[in-house]
Amino acid sequence: MDKLTWRALEFEQPERHPNWFISLWILALALVVVAIILKSYLMAVFVIISAALINIYAVKEPNEYDFFLDTENLAIGEKIYKLADFKSFWIFERENGNVLSLEGKNITNSHLEVPLAETDTNTVRDILSPAVTEKEHNESMTDILARILKF
Image (cartoon, rainbow, N blue to C red; front, side, top):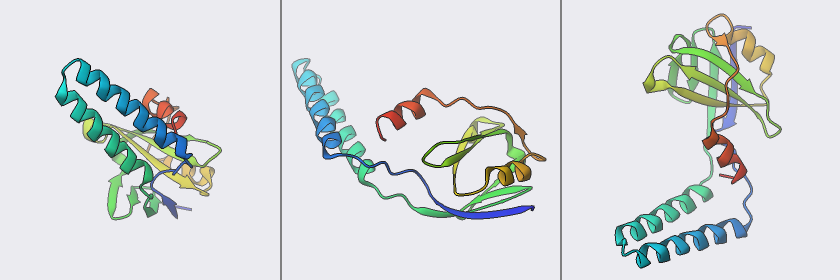
């Protein structure tokens, strides 16, 4: 098989308890108080804007995309990536869904993570292997922290 298509959400939407949002705003309020005590009003404004953006992003519903993979290209919706632009790949097998990690050859496309949904990982490996080297990737601390914080 030289082609593979699937549909998946752009990101996992973790279920957040209302306490998650309450904690966010308590932390933001505490930082605003510290900023006011330090007379750093710009920091206070920055904290409020940041908390509001985090809140908005946390309730955002993920879009569903069509994915297409062949021996030369990976398409995510309308965006097409050439496999020749990637130097390695790895598949993270997670309980909430597998994720394809692609490491780019240059800074402009340094890293790409693609949700695989129910797609067979062996089929993905078979298609990618001729074009891209399979090499274990380490998750960044940012990704690990975001998953722990349900973000």
